[in-house]
Length: 380
Image (cartoon, rainbow, N blue to C red; front, side, top):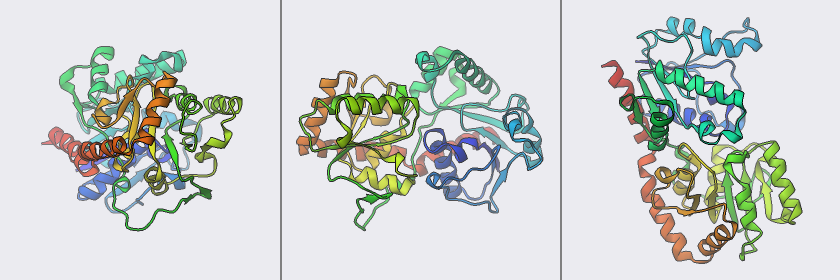
């Protein structure tokens, strides 16, 4: 079996869509190495924090436009001209990992699968420009119409596809996301508190995610200034521009600079380092307004720490009954919830135990086998 992937995000996105693609490919290479895999990307950008665990080998090939192809036409190659490479490689399956497939891919072979992560741009249009909403809608609608199977990463995403884009239910299959196995590998060595030249504090709350408005990291800062437990630090792992400056302005206004650290500003963070950061945290807070799934939630639960989520974010599938669901925009309530978990070790212990049981369904081997089953059903 020959499977090709739209791999742009694998090489360029540290989290989110990039993590999804890397985790899936890592699982396929490990648990189904007899197949042939092809990565199609406009260009290769291997950042150390991406933690790419593979190199081109007998069952893994990289495909790019080539040195003679002008860089400014990379998007055109990915959307329209990629079919030449796909035909030359004689693929059985083409998998669009990030909500799109080439616009001229309509033939019966290769069979086509697209993964749709979320429709946040339609549910929270205020965070996206009219042009971007139009582009995203067109790409997803085309991808769903021209794919044999649509993989939704949650039942919530499936429901949104049916109600908002009128995609037929029988075309959609839900396969949850997994995470890198490093988050649940047993470690016997003590975890050092020195990560990336930064000495982690003894007690800290953790947030992992992009610094953009709909991820809502501001909600944690607002709760931080109201907390009774004053000896806990807030560690933020994530990047952004405009929203980052808004967070910094709030920190300065309320004199929180001594209690907040943006760890990503210090340097790149690999999955191995992030796994250690999770395990040393006292609590993980994920205040996102909406998620298609929420990989950081399962990373935190695999890492053995309690989790607070926004009760309105559509995270119930990732979190199950193991996380505490709170109206995170009610700052006093969020502060009280954080204080309670940090103070009452029995509550924290119970949440961790529930989380450890719940996330077993998201282990990489299981998720990979479900995707592989989708491939096989299309071919046999």
